Image (cartoon, rainbow, N blue to C red):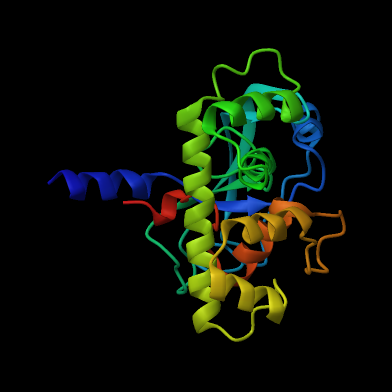
Length: 243
């Protein structure tokens, strides 16, 4: 009974789509009320129909980027309603939302910060306690980090990246048209399954998608390209893939 109720609750949440905002989170936040709202008239992300999705408004969530010193409790997330005009539904949800590409579903901190934090820990072979000190010293521009940096959160970031690593290497084994890593990188990932190399690839990555007129690099670019290819978030689990 609980499982059934949980699934019905999840369906009421909007499906989440990474949204390349072409600016920093702070610029997006400060200029949101002048933002040009995408209309999705060419294709509804849920049912595939033209002239289907309509803009509902927005909800707010916390967003934190310690690297830039950005922290707000009310970042606006655009939300849309699918009128079910098409016959190519991807899920049972009826709404979708646009998550700025710097963020991960159901996490407050930016992907770039979490990846760089774990990169510091792994590349320098730091203990969890020492990692906390180094992360705060090198990556934090906020006054109080006690609310979002502790041993538990560092472990959760590392687990998120390990899960992404496993998902990515599993996909590479069954698909032959991957263009996100070179053949030699794939062979190293496949042979030694090393988190260290995966983090290095994330840190140095440039998007291969020409549609991005605004430069996207690093883990943000990797995450966007992965979603474009597989329609699944590589980091974190979106509402449509929960339950």
